Image 1 (spheres, rainbow, N blue to C red):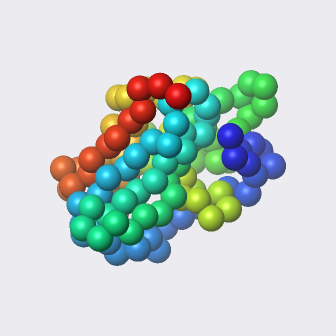
Image 2: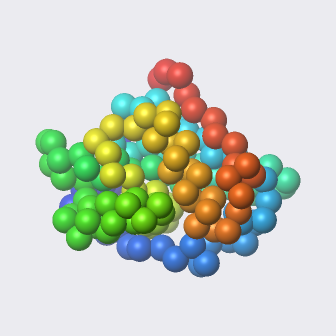
Length: 135
């Protein structure tokens, strides 16, 4: 797992500050690993020209052996989810979607990426998701 934890510097991200192609082109989000960690490493890829950016999913409610986010970030994650949105963060140079859960599921990933599509003004149908069945 990368530097996730309350000491990690999570900064909120405005979806309008992301590259324009994320909201206009067909996109594939691919998981880089199986669902074994609070931080599900992934990448967004422009299906038209192959441009990529890192985009991880974070199970923000994980608290053991230590919390993965501080309480204000966890609260903002839950608030966004209740409003039908997803909380966008940056940890270092990686875009991260914070999800109010303790473990990732296929349904949760589908919903998070769908909400992300809406955040960047794209129809959900433009996003394809690739998941790994194992390590």
